[in-house]
Length: 359
Image (cartoon, rainbow, N blue to C red; front, side, top):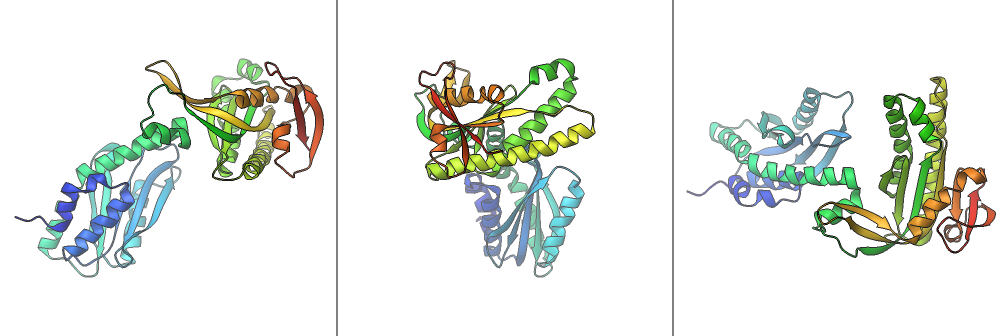
């Protein structure tokens, strides 16, 4: 007995789909090939993600592709409201013929809905019910891959996560990349942690990391490390020019400063102290790869450029500046800067030309 086209796809091919969007598009096409008069469909999953609570993919039969992928924030929207939004969208295409078929459990749980151009007969409805049952296994595989990618990106960052997913799980020489580097650090954090309650300290850290990390990501950079109350981030060169990467880093610094100014005003209204910080920018090469023991690794960056940017940030307090730039990055930007002369940095042999932003 020959399986319907949609069921054959779910048994033999669906687990190899790269994502839920391509899964839904192909499944819808196979159901059309089986003669079902579908107008559209939706697939909703609840991925393990620090920001996204549910993700929906919406497919239109006339276009043949998934036209939207919605990342839904955690606050204020319930599962029932998500389901209603999906049904309302499908109702705009045709008759909703299957309200919801849930497959799987926990993060693997998925809701599949369909809309048709006419009422379906008993055999067509039975096929959709069979599709929901057969979809459990491939959707679990697809959800598992998405979960792994989301977890690695959350803890390692997008660039490092891609390397780990590609199978780089051994200590290696690594690769040398060129990037604009940003190192930022809170000042007086030790005193704050000694005097404030633990919850207040964590809240302050999270607020700080939101501002600096959010600014880095907004301008195409990537946070490599949270080091205590410090942040090491890069703006890789290659996808864009050296000058463009350095300008992106400078724009990220400007955005972070604006965010921290707003945060300090809010903290002042609550009777809390400000959160002063220092930031340094440099551009150079670094070695990027696995470091650690044979069975416990850390994907990180090392090299003279990383050492220099962290030491340069240490000059922010004695020089009375929030942002300092090395001579290497100053040579890559047309932004007006204030030269502060050459300075010796601890552990760095050659003196470093130091510049500051005009206040």
